[in-house]
Length: 333
Image 1 (tube, rainbow, N blue to C red):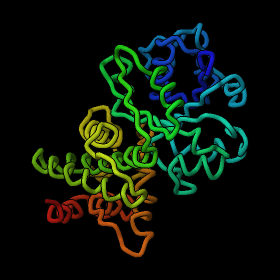
Image 2: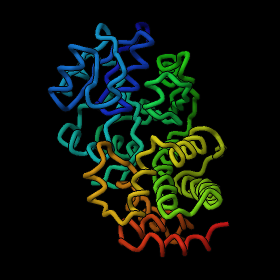
Image 3: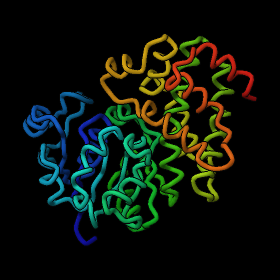
């Protein structure tokens, strides 16, 4: 690409704000789609998102927010999709050609509830996005720590090395290191699965199971993640790399993890609906449990996923968290 690319960011949440900050800090123009008119007004006038990461001051000279998706994408060379997975279908279902022939990188760590697909599969089958112009942006990186410019790590996965290199350059600076990968399938599924395992960690914390159990839970979760991803795509991958294990660890243990918090609330006997209405941000794992559970059973041989099964029983079947996790204890090693 001869000129410096212009980015179109879709999504006004915490991670969309964090990515916009990184791009602005690195001198890139960002056209930003945000749903709420009042937030758009604040961003354009003050360089502040009043709803998320309020402490972040954005570069207004390199930023144009809009409530129009078409307007946002008019001049964008690269699109970053950062809306919660639960909103993707409603946003794009009536616009099948909006992303046609565009370079799209997804930072969404969830599954589209209406279709049961990860974002890559949804965009390729419903939005005319091509495999060679699609990529994934993954962690481990909490938006809250990016806002504070604490050292954070991103993984950019794409089968197109040139596009991956452009993203790496655009997102790298003194507080962000970007690793590259060609494993879009594994990176995306790992980003979805780690949210469910973080919910399990939250449930265990809410039940006061202790640190010893947590360590065994997460070591088993790593192996379960590897089995699940291998079912989705056979590929030689090192599950101990940051995009897989690193993202799992930070989501399972961090105070910033809303998926862990969601699990903690489940252990307190709160209903799924009560938790969703009480949280200001979306916990992607809550929408991913059911489709992931179905995927683990959609072939002749059922996949061994005891942790996913346990979270499913608590969330979808409304079984007692205490009873389910007492049974899970005996299945881990």
